[in-house]
Length: 135
Image (cartoon, rainbow, N blue to C red; front, side, top):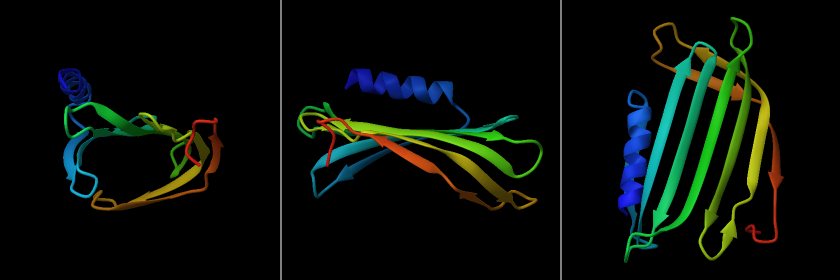
């Protein structure tokens, strides 16, 4: 548990202006879950990631995790970007979710005052499966 808290502190410190850390408790499956998110725009586009970790309620071990990381790269000065993404995860004793790779164009519209926005994407998704992946 101490290693997890250190990891969350490092992630929060690295992305101090754009992170979101959440802790939840699932009353049905009786275990806590933590989520770390980050969204960071820059001059070339933006980066987004999140990591979910499930814990054993008895001793706090990480029993499962799922993560996504996405990068948008602007194409010129218009609203079109190139989108690339990776998704994956695992559960102890069961296997992995399989790796998913996504790529394609995206179109983003933002209000002039940045009060709202909408993005449309047309992505190709490739999933790799191994014998231990969920079916």
